[in-house]
Image 1 (cartoon, rainbow, N blue to C red):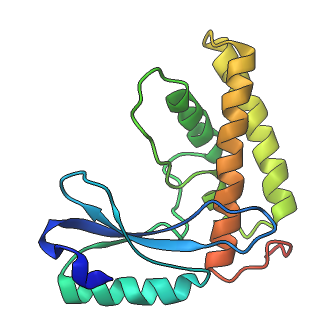
Image 2 (image 1 turned 90 degrees about the horizontal axis):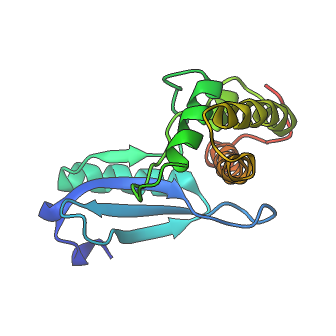
Length: 174
């Protein structure tokens, strides 16, 4: 697989989760992100993030390409509430620029050792506050709630992926 890639054109290796049904195991993917913005090249997929991390580190060392592991939690640069509100604001913008959040609510709760129930309760409160903030800024309440619900689903998927990738039982509070 890796023999068919022009490694001099690779910007970075990227490990992330893929979308899956909540009852299914999380599948992870290792991709090569190309410098020219061309389609990313899928290198491998597996339900074991550790195996993919090992492969990524090997490729990174052999090919002198950086590795970005999105299956590890990122400390938030702001509070989870501010982060979510900013993410919601960005998501409601009229441009098509994709924004991939890092260090959000899921990461903060994961780093705090929260179980899934505590995470969901935290997220509900943050979503409620963020929607209120968007309405104060003049956004349509229905649009703000719909967008917030979408962002919340992304956070839930991220929390599940962080737990699965890092060997944590989601039902156990640390």
